[in-house]
Length: 294
Image 1 (cartoon, rainbow, N blue to C red):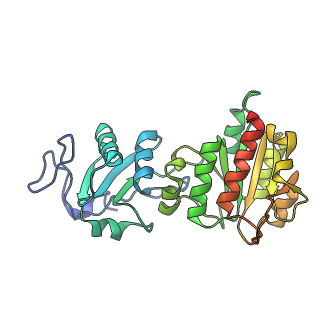
Image 2: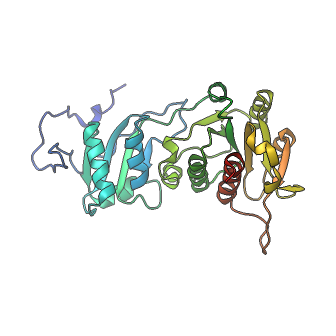
Image 3: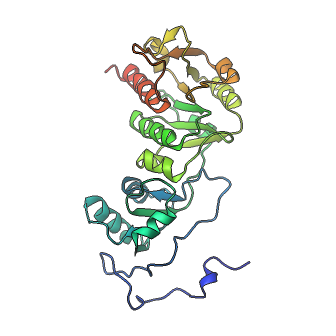
């Protein structure tokens, strides 16, 4: 097997090759026509090895929770504060920055609008439910969000953004038949994927039982529930896991059976439900409201 990078026949260069551009700080950028470095897949990773979009790339570098390998910037991109931050952060961390034609960005992008910037990085590591539970204290009771059957990466990203804002301790995702961190999910999360711990489980019903056995109340959002989300009462102030289902099918039967309480979101107009990411925002902040009294 050839070592990574051996296919080009070129070793690393100490100086800037003739004709290369330099980014801020005077360090040379690589040649324009090389493709982005693709990290090896990690079976214990949630994905996320390619990050697209300005905010997502900036937060990748700010968080420093995983290694960034390279940043590609379109050479026709106008400078702004976010791009300046990205270049400065990359220089500080010795992450190579390369300026490439926009068509290369578009060719390598896996999201619809990468905003002229792509980074490659180590994958986002999984965390264990047990590790999250160990960090609980009487003053900070665990707050989980579990996702049942959501396959749209944009929805997952928006859910992560709401979970970060609401102070959720971890998001629980099934290993199969569910989306994980794709470039679209990371871009939609606007950097939240760097901060919200994610637990991957073989089966969601089994994971919910584990949480129940640890004293966590399981509250599922279900359109046909008798109670609405504003009637969670004191349960919201206890260790809690909100369970969200995909639009259309909603929560699966086995997941519903694991819930201690099912609640609905009142719909007063013509439509019968909210988008799952909108439901996540409303539900997580209802828990915040109950816990803070605000």
